[in-house]
Image (tube, rainbow, N blue to C red):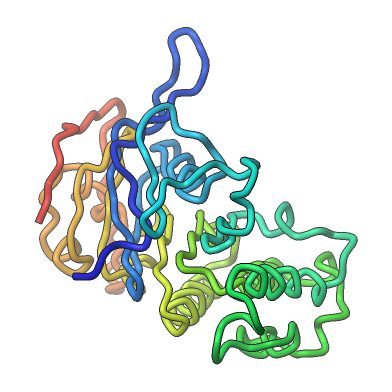
Length: 281
């Protein structure tokens, strides 16, 4: 297998407090070009903190992130801004990541301009070259370039955020719970759009979610996170068919069965704690 585009080695993140809160406890992972890696776990397990470290928004307490063979420096460090645009992130709330006072078109143009600065020339070969073209690529109308984010639905705003990120021709796209704020009918469609467009550009993708059922549809590999640790990793279908770690089994047991029998998900007893040993395939 080729060298990973993005790697994390023994990432630790502590938040200040008495005692400090360890949000990420020695996590390592690799993301290769042309694959979708799903990172799943319950709220508060450290997924979003890890995602912010991987894209340079947060400096880890310890450990290293390597992007295309070089150590990734946090955003804001002199000389790193242009290079870091090869890692793009789509956040959970597009309302906070899109500027409400700017029209949609110029915000997607920001991504196109970032690709030109990093790659030179006209940016990524074969990719759309205008905001209107990108809107059509993600399933919207080209005329929407003149609209403001506030006039769009939540699903449309998240598509705009995705278009802006992909317009930057990233090597890695990180989706941090990008569908959790959307209605159920929109979630699967947007997850598929994000993954298919990312792979079409030859990039890798980390898709962060607490919803295993959605991640199963798009991920090649799964990482299961619990209390800051990765407790299971392996091919998505193998983990789905035969989960080995008790926490993964509990996550899968919480998914309702659409079999018409009216069976409820399994209930985990309050106060249950799972072992932090890792199941690797």
